[in-house]
Length: 138
Image (cartoon, rainbow, N blue to C red; front, side, top):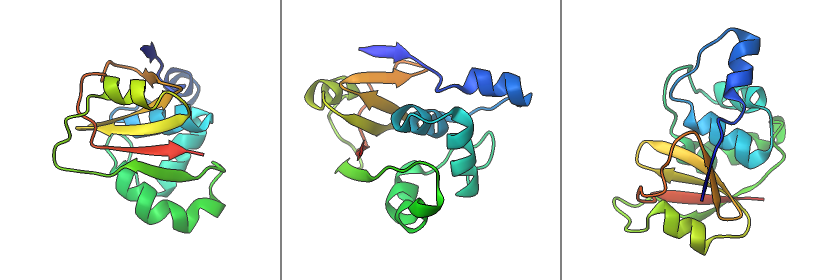
C-alpha cells in the first residue's frame, strides 16, 4: 500500500516562496521522523545537501549522523536493516509486507522514501523498485 505524501513540501514551498526538487531524502526524513519539512530540510542542508540536488542519504546516516545527532532536532536513532548492495531482488512492496511493523527509511535506485507499519509514504509509486538499503527509525 502507498499513501501519496510530499512530507509537507507543498506547504513549505508556499510559506518560503522557494521551489524544491530532488528532495526525496528530505521528504523521507520528514515523514519517518514526524518532523516538519522545514526541520528535515534544514537538517540535511546543515549536513551538506544543496537545494535541487540529490543527497547520499545512506552514507550520511551511517557516517555523519552518529557524529552530529546530538546537535540535530530529530531525536531519533537509525539502525541499518538492509545494507547497500549492487543489486537486490527484493521489491519495495515485498519489503513493506515483511517489515510491516515500525518506521523505516528505504532506498531504491535514485530515490528514498518512508515506510510506516508496512505502508509507503511517498509522492510517487516506488513499490516495484528493488531495495538497495533500509534503516529502522527508533
